[in-house]
Length: 143
Image 1 (cartoon, rainbow, N blue to C red):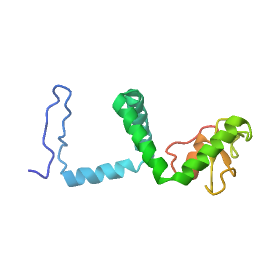
Image 2: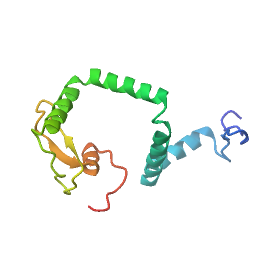
Image 3: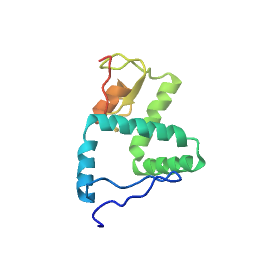
Image 4: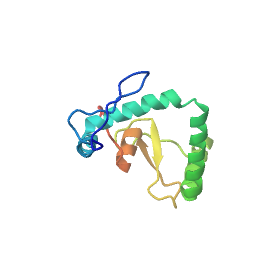
């Protein structure tokens, strides 16, 4: 019986873990296949956004983010230095933020192909920047 999920009634906000007629192994396999679909990724990213908006002002979340950012700065000092240099140049007006190279959108991110060359930047909108890194889970309507 341990191969199957046990039924826990929905009481007091608790969820049930019972899955009808499916063992744990098959349920896991079904879930992995489901996660590969685009529709699931969109739903998942919507849920993540909803969760983020709910917890972003909580003290524990801010402390956790500070710790993660600190570790990233230590782990990738060259990346951090390069981004900081670009941010300073844009803020001081020595470098101008251009529209997206692909679609012409004015809200852009600076993308470094090589962190050894901090001022060689490709200006890309959020969609095309994520596409460059292979992170897109949705399609842009205007392109």
